[in-house]
Each structure stands twice: as C-alpha cells, then as structure tokens.
Image: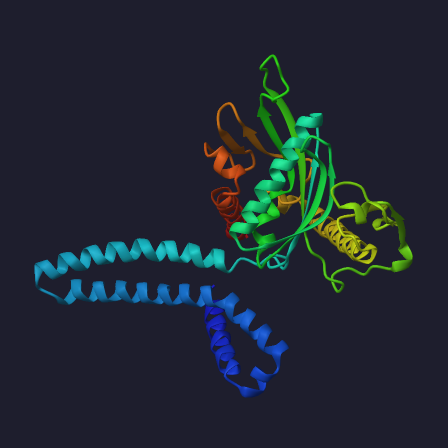
Length: 357
C-alpha cells in the first residue's frame, strides 16, 4: 500500500508542475483532465501527509521517553504516544478506503425513474412524495432538475415520473436508492383508520454519454402523439410527444414534457442510452454476483430497500439495518444521514473484501 501511496505523491507533484506550464493552461481539455486528476488525488495525498506526521510524532515521543529525565515531560510524551498510535491505526483504515477503486460513474448525472407500485392511488401519492424528496435533496446540493416525463393520476399522485438530476457526484450519492420503497400509513381516504402498506419503485441510472453506449438508430422506432397533462394548450394541440421503441430490447420510452417534438426526441434518446448502459452494468455485476452479495445493493429494483412508517415516524433501510426517527425531515429532502450510512457500509464491505484477498 505504501509503495502505491509514494507513487501517487510523485504523480500529484507532477500534475502541479504540469498545471503551471503555459502550454497546458492553453489546452483547455488537457487542463480540465489534469485538474480533475489533481482533485481526485488531493484527499489521498493530504491523508498520507497526516499519516507521516503522526508517525513522526510517535518517533519523537519515543525519543523523549528514552532520553528525557523530566517526569512531567515524560508523562506528556506518554499521552502523546498513546494518542498518536490510536490515530495512526485510524488513518491507515481511512487510507485503505481512499485507495478503493473508484466507481467510474460516480461523477455522472443521473436519470431517476419512480413508479407507483402496489397500492393504487396511495402508491401514486407516495411516488409523488419520493419525487419531492429527491428534488429537495438535489436542490440542497445545488443540482439542477430536468423533467423528462410525468404521468399523473388526477389526485396529485404520480403513476410514473422520469427526470434527470444534473450535478457533479449525483450518481455517487443517489446510486443506493434503486429498489422498492415501502410506505406504511393510514390513507386520507381510509374511513376505518387502518394502516395500509403501499410501494413505489425507484430506478437510478447514470447518464450515459454517446461514447458509453453504441446506439444504432436503425434499431429505434419513433412514434409521435398528442401530449396530455399540464403542458399548456400549445402542448395539447400538437403532436409534440414522442414514444421511442428500441426494437432489439423492447424498451419503450415516452417523453412529452417539452413543447418541441425534437426536444422530446432527444430526451427519450438520453433515457434509452442510460437504460442500455444500465443493462450493460447489470451484466457486469451479475458476472461478479458473489462479490456483489457482500456489498450494499445498488441496482436490484425488486429488492425492498426501505420502509417509511408514518405511525412510528420511522425510516428503516433494511440493507444496513439503519433506522432513523426523522421521517418528516427525510421526506423533506434531508437524506444526508441515510446516504452517508449507506456509503460507509458499502466502503466497509469492499474494504473487508480487500482485506480477505
């Protein structure tokens, strides 16, 4: 591990030199790539610097204990030694986590699909609440929301909603949200006051660039139709909505949020690329099924991942046995604690696997 860290320090210093080169500064593409690489390495380099400083503190304390006669100084050195030894162990674990292979999709934007599941109108209302939760979380991170398709049920619920979240690191935070979300509460329409259970399915996909997926346009069939919903009179009186069918896979995508047929077509293609990219990712993950079982689930849409229990004001993530009684705050977009715990659990599982090897 330490040979690798030394190599990374050397590379980090090389990047700093390159960034001061006027020819590099004038080459925007190269400059951008080097800045990203520097940013990726900076946390590791800083942590390794802290490791070296802590190790030096241990050596200094040992020297004082060997050479010093003053009892008060020796007592201080003992305390410093104990603290530094404990901190050194912590830093080693932190370095191991920082050196774990980075998910190449982590910096990408995401496409989010939410569909009401079991529970009819109540499930659609829950799907709308999840949409609100994710958009408020995105806004707190200063990420941009771009609606792609919305199918409402007439009482404020969403049968289906597809939208994009644009922001650096969006996938790294939201990739753990794929799966079945379950709500337990007394519906407003329930006269008997009985608790009902409803579900909604969430799918999180990294936005796929054209270079990520080869898409043959001959495999794509486009149909246009009249948009419906809250699009304004202009939307509803022109054939602006687009239905895209990918013939080899049978994937069908509808987009009707924009007034322009061309814009809806582009959005549908974005969703299709991301769906196909996700299929490729799933194939690769399936090939490493044994390894994946030890990690936090990030892709199985049929996996019941979380329960929102209104009578108890409780949210439970079943994958990591995490429970919070901050239901209202979480549904208002305060997902930081939940997501941080999921990231920590995923890192711990991956680290355990590395240590086994």
